[in-house]
Length: 203
Image (cartoon, rainbow, N blue to C red):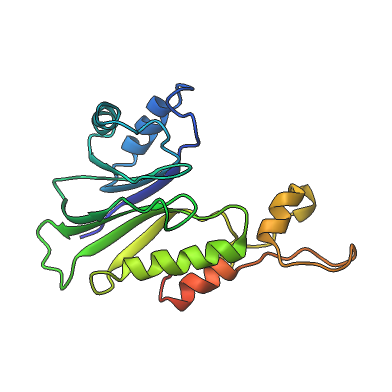
């Protein structure tokens, strides 16, 4: 059995700016069984959540957040919800959404854990700590899980972008520190390193 997983930061204001319907349609075209969403700022009441479930044709779980909520949607024909954690707004900058599932027709040795994450955008060091916190939660049911979302920081193996085109505050957050204007900018991959150290792949 294969699971198709989609992750999408819909960006704040997706509903108010009338972007959500097109985003939901694009997600549906991919026919995923699991969707990780970030910045779902309008999903703050049951009626809005039900409407989004209708748009996606999936069940939906939304986590609390001090800033921008995260969410997980799933195909209830393929995945059966067993456990969830949504009261995470004080655990990380944005909080995170965690759900664990049984997979229909598959006898797994443990529950499958899915986490929709949105890591701290302003500090690679802070985001790495958040990755440690979230990574431990992915092992909650013996270690079969996925973390997906807006990581905000460079992965281990991507080529260096042209950092001169990046805003100074983003360079400060996402590059290794420099001590001279002649120093080259280099990506700070501590978040990817942290996740890799925890046994995660594609980081």
